[in-house]
Image 1 (cartoon, rainbow, N blue to C red):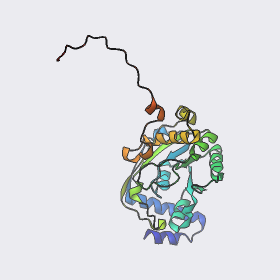
Image 2: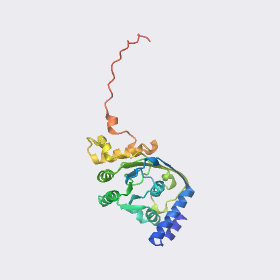
Image 3: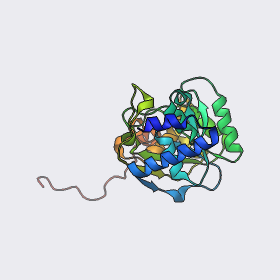
Image 4: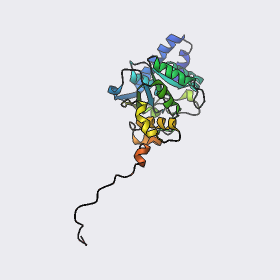
Length: 256
């Protein structure tokens, strides 16, 4: 049913089409979900880079709703232009198109420029939706954007969208919506410089910084969602045990 409505809306001119699609999607989210947004007190007033786990094609609009009235630009995969429903859904939010797993750095430049112009940007550093719900290793471009922009980074944890709009690898444009509870949790902002210690000595410092960023997202998620970022930072795992002073009390008597 909803796919037919999107098809009808697609013939409208751009501006009324966007308004109609946003209204339709707000109605669907209102009728089919319950939403919980936590940590709004952590949102900085200045332009920020938001980093979030990625579960579903419903993620962007769910986060758009959670961040209102703040305007945020989303990095969105160009393949979303391939079906009517995903194309119109992408149009409903402000986006910067990217080609995942390519060497094209133009979207990174545009993201940095957008941040420097005074707007916030949200990225999904994993580069694609998780098929298990658990975090997969993020792409190193996330730390490059953070380095060049120099803005606060806000970790965001999202749960429930994988149940609301499950992935259908056979036909992304026919994905169905179901009833679900959605949770968005904003963590405390940080600067990339604060993570330098976690990248010290790494073979790939840029990847190590991205991984450090994603561990901040993982800490906000339930354990089953943390995936490859379930473990603590390397320096915490590899730290030598603290030496303890020798006992000063008398030894116990034999047989006790």
